[in-house]
Structures are given as C-alpha cells and as structure tokens.
Image (cartoon, rainbow, N blue to C red):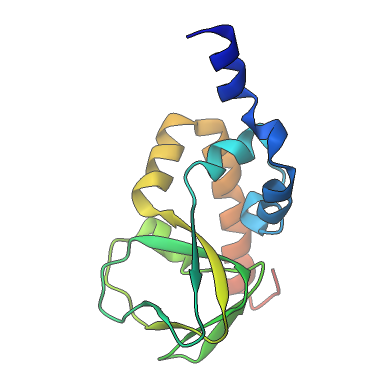
Length: 150
C-alpha cells in the first residue's frame, strides 16, 4: 500500500465532521473520537422512508437496529414513538428473535441502521471501541428500565 493510499484510508475521518456531529447526537456513541466514529460510520447503512412506509413487520427476523436522524417512527402494536436522535430496537443488537412489532414511518424519516452481525464484528475486532459503545448502551438501557430519560 502506498503512503497516499494509507493516508487516504486512515485519515478519512478528517473529512466527515458533519456526519460525526450527527453520530454524536446518539447517546450510544457518546465519548467517541473521530477515528472511532469513522470505524462505526463504515458499518452504518443510511436509508430514507416516506410517511406511512414500513421499516419492518411483526414476525420478521431481527437484523438491524435503527438510529433516527430525522422524522418519526411508531411501533404499531405498542404505539410507542421514536424521533430524531433516538435509537430504537436497541435490544436487537443482542437478540436474533422475531420482531414483536411493526415499525411505520409516521412522517418522512431518515435513519441509520446497524446490523447485528456488523455490531458483533465490531466488538470482536475493535474491543476498545466495542467496550465504549457497550458501556453507553448499558447506561441507556439502565435509564430505560428505571423510567428515566436518556
């Protein structure tokens, strides 16, 4: 690998300040530096849903956790809503069960999605970063179980 290729690959995080600002809005990425955010960003899929569009249906296999950049998503069975800056189906990172709800975009919505398998690879290949994210997830789940805002 040439020096130019090496620098291009390893310093890509210097060119993405807007994206990192978006990622830092999510509590599960709190305290991560730009290099770590760059590693995560490479694993995220960006998708837009129109108002009324289904993100997934009840009974489908769990594959992705969603981070909402803009818009709103509602889980049909529980009527629970999630908006910008929130993560929903966080537990799906640790489970491969079937979806208990159908998720519908209540308005035009933009999300980032992280797959279950990519998250596991992250933890196994980049343990320091994985520990930071897992710690943040534990804090968020603790707040949710104790009915405190995240």
